[in-house]
Image 1 (tube, rainbow, N blue to C red):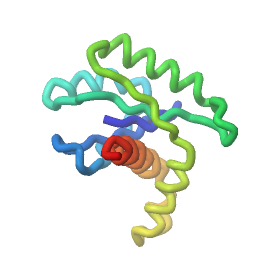
Image 2 (tube, rainbow, N blue to C red; image 1 turned 120 degrees about the vertical axis):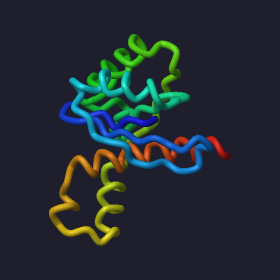
Image 3 (cartoon, one colour; image 1 turned 30 degrees about the vertical axis):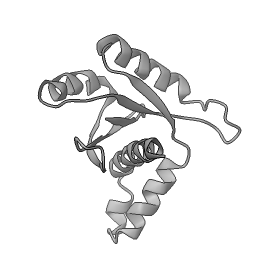
Amino acid sequence: MAFDYGTKRIGIAVTDPLQIIATGLDNIHPNNIIEFLKKYLQTEQVERFIVGEPKQMDNTPSQSAIHVKGFVNLLKKTFPETPIEMVDERFTSKMASATIAQSGMNKKNRQNKELVDTISAVILLQSWMDRRLF
C-alpha cells in the first residue's frame, strides 16, 4: 500500500496479491487516515507501507518533509508490525498530471487534485514494485 501524503488529503494506492500492478484506492483526509486503515486492514492483507518522500532537486528534504515524517511516525506507532519504506516522490505529481492529460479526460477532471494524488500514489507503488524486479 502506498501513500502520497499531503496536509489536505492522502492519495492511496494498492496492488494485487501478486504485486504486478498498482491501482488507485482512495483519497483520505489526514485526520481520518488511521480509522480508514484500521478498517481496511481488517479485510485486506498489506505487506508494507510505501510512503512518498518529498525531496528537492538537490536531494535535500522539502518543506513538506516534516509532515511526512509525522505521518510515518504515526504509522509506526499504530501499525508497528507493518514495515515502512520511503520512496522518492519527486515528479510524481507532474507524471500523474501528464497521465491524466493523456487519458482524454475533460479539463475539469484533469484539474481534480484528488485524482492527481491518487495517481501519484499509484506511480509511487508501481515504481517501488518495478525496482524490486531488477
